[in-house]
Length: 318
Image (cartoon, rainbow, N blue to C red; front, side):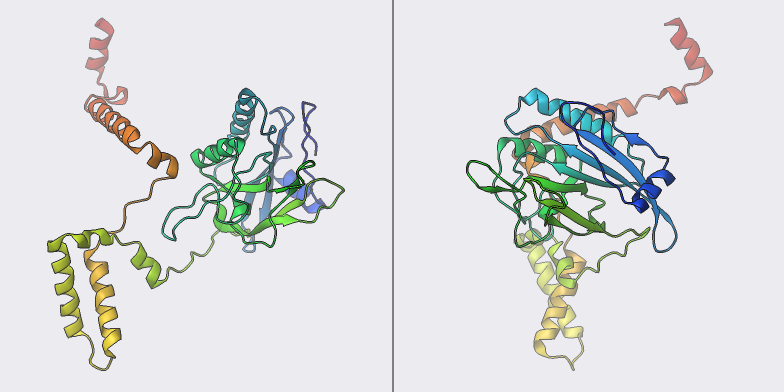
């Protein structure tokens, strides 16, 4: 399937089973976003026989040195494309980003970011723009979350330096379906390596078991800096230690007592904010407070749905 004529041309090639899945979803070809974006919706059954839909997008970004307005037009068109996705669809975007989005390390208990820890660290201006778009829209580059032997998908003709500019992108909520993503050998003669991804099609995915260590890492230990809170914690540990079974070794009794006391006394850590929020936290926090105050005031007044006939008469006179 090939998009309409435009400045560039993108397409989606489907197998016979893929074409059948496309027809089951309504045979709609979303190709009215210019020549850089095309999308289809696929409908297929999972192992339990339930229907699952995939919104598959192919996109080609402007080159990194393009005029900013050109990028804005492209991102606006991508917004329009993603708005066609039906609620519940699994989102999968194959994209030639024409930019280096780098990598990002994060702690185990921090929320998922737009890019993961694996890949090339190089980040250019176009990559920053794309990363911001992904973060704001709750998307992530799955190809940066799987460790591979190589990450380069394109070699610069002059510098001969390898760059990681081709990715599979999905929503953060759909990332749990991804089993693998990374570069592979091209099927056709091309200056780009192919990128592949594997995903699980299931109506209900099993939640990953949380280890005891992961549960403890979610607790806010900063409260122990307060003397009163620290004393409360110590007393709780001693009490639980004294009540523990005598047949356990000393270390196990202390460890179990500390773990139980921490779960009872310490609250969970506040949700970590993304880096772009942290940079402008002072300014954004003030604006959020003003917004909340304005909303609180507006909620004190009756909404139009709660107006009585008498109220309508008063409004009509005024």
